[in-house]
Length: 347
Image (tube, rainbow, N blue to C red):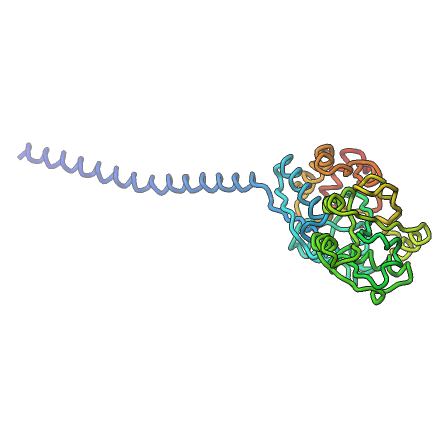
């Protein structure tokens, strides 16, 4: 009997031990799963934080100088920092970039200085205030080239009765063309108005479907450079009196400039013209870190940008840190302001 009792006790102890082991195992397993889940979540959050923000840059029509420059900026910026990844996007034109950026549909946009300042306060061509806009930088002074292949067109008044491309609808070019036309006491009724993309306008010039085209851009504009090599190209010069009138009509947004002799094949004399200051704006809600990285990458890699598009650095048309925000009355984005304070542009 005693032996049997001992055997039963031993069996009971063994069974109880097994039950405890299983119970402990069941309690421990959820803790390990929770720990694994927490580690996975932390790793995912860390990975997301290390991913660059995806930003779109509203440029202008395909093939236009702003579109080409937007691609260059994006390439250099993406190469030299990791906070943001910028993708250039075709847009209906610089004026139309205002609502795109203000609404947050695009994070960044190209714009003229005059239009940026006017849009923020709701004046000029803007019938409402776009107060989500913030200034980042001025990247160039873009002269107007009034281009023709017809050597009988010597001045603006010779455009009467001709087929003239004045810029795509909603573009800064189209807006500036109206000031030029008005300064010469002309109207759209004096010629056939055509509104293409820059690429289409240049193609139409080659094919004889357009007699003249208004094209803004830092010389040499690649499309005009190609045109000058394939055809005898002429640029119409403006006189001082009318340049002054255009400046006054535009409220100072369009200044005086010169396309230097030799900028294009066959252009052997300086061409007096007007220009506008080209800016990059941002939506106010994009991150300070991202804007700081963007602005820093631009200004610290000007030599590389100039190598991609000669003339973008310094000179009559190009960028300089001293003029980075000169004339921007729209508030700066905090990320841009931080950089300019670091380098002494803002005291």
